[in-house]
Length: 435
Image 1 (cartoon, one colour):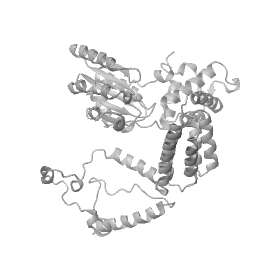
Image 2: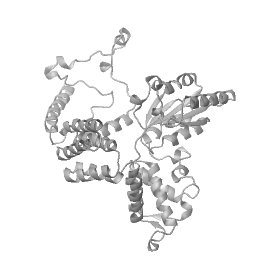
Image 3: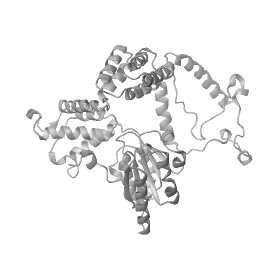
Image 4: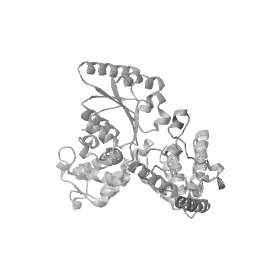
């Protein structure tokens, strides 16, 4: 039987949930879909964020035939076959959209094989990757493709998908007549870790249990929190054996670190490692914690976590696991601040609201005579020539944005001193702007 996640793929723009920065009214990918004007692109985002779904919608809206390759199992011959198919389609007045999943797994020569065919317009390449394209893809390929970043699915969006799947009789589980408790929906969305495919997988398993009559008859045909919690726990054990993510346990580790409890942090870390979780996954999340929950209150936290990663890579288990434990303890006991994390979110929203504002002339690069004639760099004040190496009053934001303040240091650790310095600079800047 076709999995629920596959059956519930959106078939129109109106059915898409999330990714509003790309698909909202007037946003880049929505314009492409509505106009049907396809171009080669890289869709970069975490698992279950909708990369494959978007590729299918692009093919449908652009009237193109979709040919799919997986970089895990395909080689140069498969690329040649796809190009040959594109040639036949062109002769017949059509076009091929070549979707390459896990495109970052192709080596340099395989990536180079796409270049002339993208250049000639024979194929429209849509590559999907969970890795940073700047590090994993050739510059030549990147220069011929636009990169679109897909965000992790937000929990409210996942809740919408879960409820939609239960009510949809044509493609979902609506014919089962199942209801679901609100707290069960909330739990499912949180346990999915931003992965829509995982959320629907949990839901499908819970529905199977209810339909088989294994649910307590007193509960009727409602998926309650106990049933859903049991499904998530059982599935997590299976995932653990394959080295996948312990979503509940990584959440417990993260919250223990944030709550400055080294004992609980070490406990959850050990639970994950002994359960078979890939230590690199834990390290990746700990690097995130170092920036999200510690930040500049103690910049050493990030360095110590990266050192633990390198130590583990050099020693391997079990010796290298001690370095991971050391980093977890340090993260838990050091000063905490989420000021960098909040600044990151505010800046991201500002970029979403002002995506195409021109760079002010005075801070543009002026490497050529023409650029200088156009006014690039004119009026720029070199900070090191100013008092205290600070050009008070000089603006660095696009015109019309004003002077937003994203970063507000916390009263913790090194950020106390950073905050004092920044407050003084901002006062001088505002005073100079008024003069």
